[in-house]
Image (cartoon, rainbow, N blue to C red; front, top):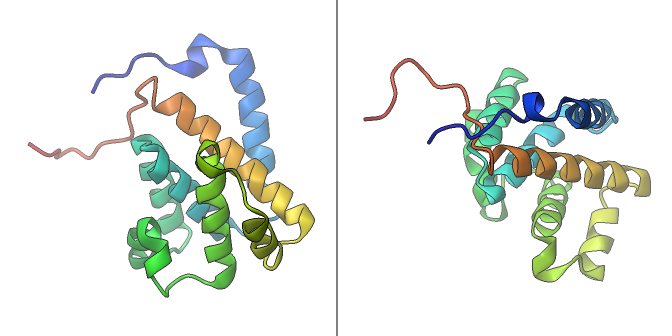
Length: 152
């Protein structure tokens, strides 16, 4: 795969605004570990290799275990995640695929069992942010860092 364009260079003013919102999300007060996990999950759904690599690497750097990172894609089947994390994953799946089924009243109520109204807004904005990054990286073929030895 070859990079199509560098979006920061192509549209620097709007990318500055995106970066400001990204910083606000990172500093919104939700647990850093939770933000890593939902960013990873949304990026998996969207098939964004750049963001999957980045968020798994950053999560490991911040102390997340390899095992939990491997199991994010199968979170429904793994007991390694807290109820709050599971609620965040369900919200992530629904918002990332919002055109499929919207967000049910049941899911909304379940989310509010683990997140305050303020936190649910922050969580939703964080998901909007990672989905924005995915929608930049995937179509423009952003290339994640690659090790010196690559697959044949």
